[in-house]
Amino acid sequence: MRGRIPPLLAAVAVLYLPLARAAPVRDNDFPTSARVEYVLECMSQHGGRQEYLYKCSCVIDRIGAGLAYEDYVAMSAALRYQSLQGERGAEFRDPKNVKDMAGRYKTLLAEAEKACLTL
Image 1: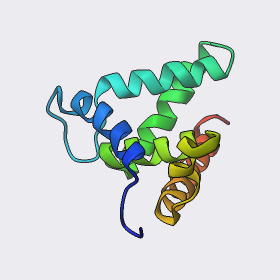
Image 2: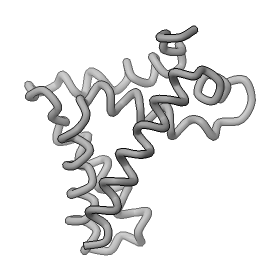
Image 3: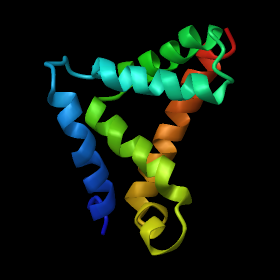
């Protein structure tokens, strides 16, 4: 199973990739809609406070600087869905490559949050 992306993870990525292709983007650049979605979710997690508009924007900009959008979609989905219970969650909990993707994204996210959210 090494090197193979589980079908559920691939399906999630396929749902988001058309959004990435809606407008031409440079390598390692995220579509505006993906950045806005991240910032809104991040702000919501911090009580919707205005100061987090800038802090959360900083986080997604740092992530985008170090990761191609397609990788971001796969890696963030791998981390997000690891907590799914039962058989559906096994696609995200069990394969080593998915665990590795989630771990790498978690590290990138932690570094970006440390740099940006403590401003």
